[in-house]
Image: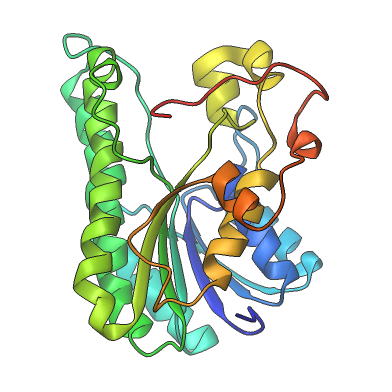
Length: 272
């Protein structure tokens, strides 16, 4: 599929994986709707919706920056309205926005639980829901959730139950939508990295510079997303993809260029 003039709505696209996917698709001529909260730069995180929009337009696409906290329906509706007014439709939705808190049940405060569920589960559901009428009109519509394959090994529940079930819910939303929307030829899939990815979350919350040096760049996720979204929405739906597997299916097996530190030992991500 050509991405020329296709409109892609990405939540959490002001930085990290969301921005990387936006840049990749913008370079292919897509219109990118950046639905994120950051309008002032946080030094620990970097980037705003406006700086991301400027980068995407410099990459060759068109960009629309709309401040949006996906916990609130009115803000989701505002993004959709502005996207339709500006670009006339929505062809692809990427649910990337996510909250993480790797704590045991006793140490998971109600407000942290609610934040993860409001963003990861409810937000993903409501953004997808709001876009469905427009996706039905697209010639090759895709929903892509950044969430893991559902792995029932108990080790993934033992140390951070609340986070795990919120991410698995994101995957179940995609799989459920794949079944529900198949008759409309709207695809829904998930994508997850095999290794940790060098993002602010890894640096600030998980393992600092040491883990960053054992990670891959966001480019691997952007490239994997590009190949998934290039496929027919009729045949490519209901899958839980791992980035490496997507690239391997395209004949790409030398992944050294994606390492933050060339030749470094890589750290396997959660749920894989």
